Length: 112
Image (cartoon, rainbow, N blue to C red; front, side, top):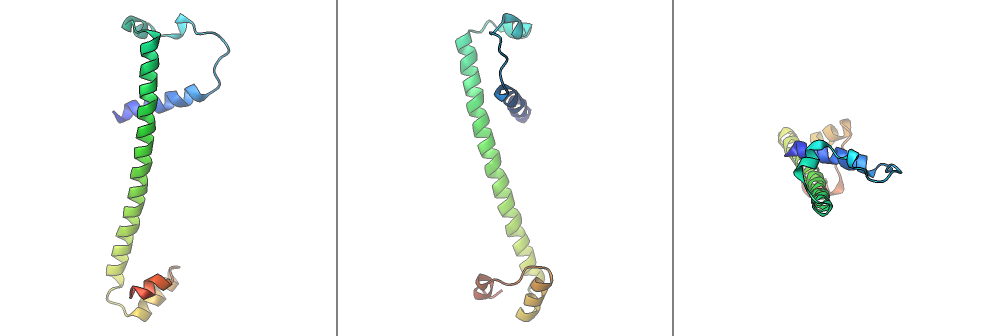
C-alpha cells in the first residue's frame, strides 16, 4: 500500500507540472485502462479519491515524523538524566557546558 502512495505521489508531481497544450486524446490512455471501460466521471472520482488519500497520507506521515522527533528528544533527555544522575549538580552543570548544553533556568528549577 505504501508503494501505491509513493507511486501516486510521483504521478501527482507529474500532474502538477505544466500540462501539454494538446487536447485529451485516446492515445494518451494505455490499452489496459481502455479495457476497464470506465467513464470519464469514474476516472475523475478515482482521481479525486486518490488526491484526498494522498493528502491524508502526507499529513499522517508528517505527524509521525514529528512524533518520532519528539520521542527521540524525550529518549535522549531520559538517557542523559540517567547518565548524569551519579554526578553532583555542579558536575552536571560543567558536563553540559562542556558539551554545549548549559543548564537553563527551567532545568535549574526542576533540580537538574
